[in-house]
Length: 406
Ligand SMILES: Cc1cc2nc3c(=O)[nH]c(=O)nc-3n(C[C@H](O)[C@H](O)[C@H](O)COP(=O)(O)OP(=O)(O)OC[C@H]3O[C@@H](n4cnc5c(N)ncnc54)[C@H](O)[C@@H]3O)c2cc1C
Image (tube, rainbow, N blue to C red; front, side, top):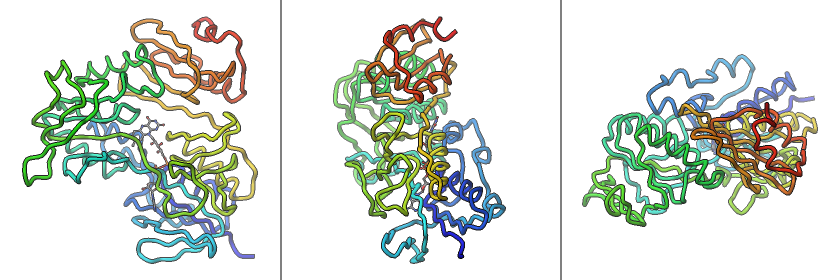
């Protein structure tokens, strides 16, 4: 019998954890990890502190190359997968190499979505990789004035990185408050106030209308906004040094021909198996059939990707493990903790306990499916269990009482 050949595309937390699990499951397997990045796994969450200048680069490293060698995992850096031939079961790379597999894991995540009217300006930054973080760190150190675009979970990291490097920072949020997807104005007010305390100027209900550069130059120097804004006295921000953008991601999955959703994300069942039985998918930008939420689900967080990588690998090795992890995502820049758990799209009930404490609970009918907690995070593990156990509550508001969690 020959050794099973596993190929993993992507060396993020999903891919690296999958490779580790495959080795634990099968000591003889032939395991290859392909990544287009130039270094082994580093902690993406820590890039926010690296960008701010509060954490040296070496502390972001999770694995060095010897970690892979010690486990007899063949890591190929700077190797982009350009095609998967599902019939011959081969992966093709940008340098023309053809690698055959028996089981393939696609853990290639997503890439930042670009501003539609970005004509290739040199001072527009997008954030995802270590290389991006290094550029943003430099840009934040050098900039006197910056504009940050995108009111989501990653935009806040960019706004804080520029402000903490003493750039005059304008943070443009299209909606009426930060993270409109998961928070109402009352909860977002705490986060916005904390950003303002760090020097971020927040402009809500504001979109970029146009970008301007000096003739013949590739640098944005001025933006006009969709609406007049009192705090900038008009609808234009002048003398800009940098623009940083976080408006979502697009999936890195064009190279593989398996079933996808309308946004191009790979679809899997509850075992993380795709429409091709020999191809699995895990991590960011994968839509899986969640047994917990009982519907197609997409989540993006460090822990979620690691857990998905582990579950996919177990199943590639022949087990039948449903993926039931309940996602959490934290923001840690401030003196209050922010934590989002589970599904943020349910029907909300919320309460602001005091200036810095807020909780929003999300329900599907009488079932608790998610929570967003600011300042007051007591019961976070119980909440995860309640979601996973599909607990039902007739009196939803009772869960907003602090006594319930004491
Ligand atoms: C600044 C920042 C702050 C964050 N903060 C938090 C936080 O506070 N909490 C939290 O939980 N999460 C946070 N996240 C998100 C979290 O880091 C990600 O959800 C997680 O790391 C995703 O892991 P992944 O393995 O699914 O994907 P990725 O880490 O994106 O890995 C995919 C890898 O595949 C590679 N790849 C893509 N296409 C190809 C190809 N064709 N060939 C070869 N390789 C390819 C990519 O270059 C990448 O290395 C943050 C992310 C960033 C950038």
